[in-house]
Image 1 (cartoon, rainbow, N blue to C red):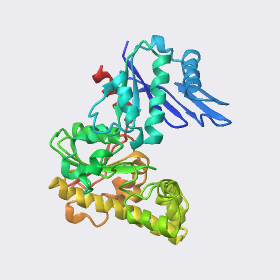
Image 2: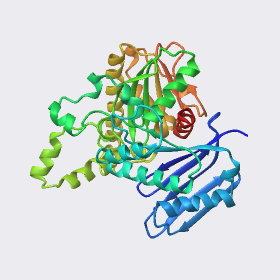
Image 3: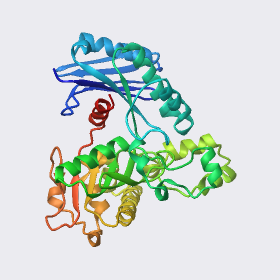
Length: 393
């Protein structure tokens, strides 16, 4: 029987999970528990043609995961018969301590807890999920895979902020990046697809959260997200890059608290702040109908991507491949055109017919004459977590 890995992503009020075959990435079963701790919670579980959806109160993560395990027993597949060799947990922040997947022990748990101030919402929820899963599934190893691990290879010039070094050291302020599991999976998939390990790559992970990375021969040398996932590209509700003095200005003149500004920059800005919508499909429709704010919002979004493409081409000292991934990157042909328009001087030539053609899996959307290949690669973070979990044990 093939090995399987149960991949768990525990959020502040949710649990996403998949039972994955690490050999080929096949998701044998999957599900989601939403609105944990709220009046009404939603649970979906899918196994082949068997699908169930429940709408019942789930008080905490322990109750949620207990119900998930019940559904594996009643709907399938039975975990005891599925050769589960590990439980792989996504953890957002690994700080400067973790550069690879790591088997959970008491020291690892203490370190994840110590890193909560760097990602208070995420690491705390991730930690809760790990502890609950360990209690409910005590007979298999638990492995943590960190969003930041792939970016531990960043050179000092990229990872270091020009901040007073003693303050930076004391409070662990540096650029950690995020979405590393996706960037690692996509860049490796591209290298395997093209049969070259020495590629200079830019990976654009464009979704509600968005990030860019520069990868040289499989090693990350730069990334757009920084101390937190707020820095970098324009996102669904996050500003991305902004003058830090905007915080001082709002505090002094708008009399906003730190929490107010945090909420503004992370939850009320980005495309939502610019257009009223964080779904780019709706924003495109608004722009086509003549909405000026939508047109400006899309232009800002694309302009920021172009800036990162240009700067990363310089950091890499050349460029072989640009890859679009995640929800927007994989499905928004118009944004791919906008983001690469005018970059022919870098050797980037998009084939508009290929770009607009529907398709699944890896596909090339650049012209045959393009010096830089442009690809669309569906990301698969769960498969990457499963593979790393097996490697770790």
